[in-house]
Length: 400
Image (cartoon, rainbow, N blue to C red):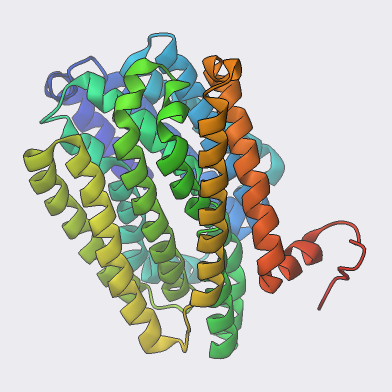
């Protein structure tokens, strides 16, 4: 990976004028910085997972998303525009990766031949999974550079970062369950793998589903927090959250394929997703602009989900937890109705003039209603919550 990154970095430096002309601002140096920062982060992430510190990786991954969103928005608001977006990535990655290397206390050692062979056998298929992730994150923004202004790209990037923040829980689930799935798969326990996959699908949309409903109800006011120009991205925000919701379910299924040592099937599913994503982004952005980018991302995620489900279903006897997902939607719709009513009532009050505070109140109301309702209507969610609390809840004993 280091060799590949070095080659790409050299090419960026050699063709920096073309890179800068494409972006519209001098960013070649930033691109080189991000390449090596990404390499640093990926190395630490792999080390954490390999040392069975998935819980630490999950926390750092969430911290990276939060740090990136905060830094990017802050730098864009004060006028750094695209440079602020790039610095946000770099700063978040450096901070979280450095914390990771401190926790690891690495002691370098040379790998043996069998380690190299095993890694190669897995990596010859698994590398496309990383490309799939990068494609999902960046292709739409890259293609937008050919068709829309830098101002719209900046708004789209902020909206994307805001949407991506809602996928923290889905990322944490896939990272946490992978080692356990791999372990039970090695023991030839397909029913246990199916159960873990069902659990992953049950909770992958726990935050994204209410996030989507919330975007429909108060998306414009949420984006107004970042400035009046960002309100133009309200429609894009909703579509991108739909894309992320579909993608996070896709991610859980691909996680299962890799865990059962079928990276070849994950490779095929990733290939279909990448080709679909690139083609749809080019066509739909050309025809419909930045909304087309969001729609292309959502459609390609849906195609990837169908392919991944087909491959998983052929190897693991999974059942989709439709009842649990339906309860999450029911709680989210109830939340949306109450938040909508609260917004209508609040906009007649002077507090609505202080948009940030007003949005904070609406989000807090929504969170309480959603989780309170879900806790009441879902026995599975109640059990999960009570079993993971560090204390006993009266009338709700922990269950095995």
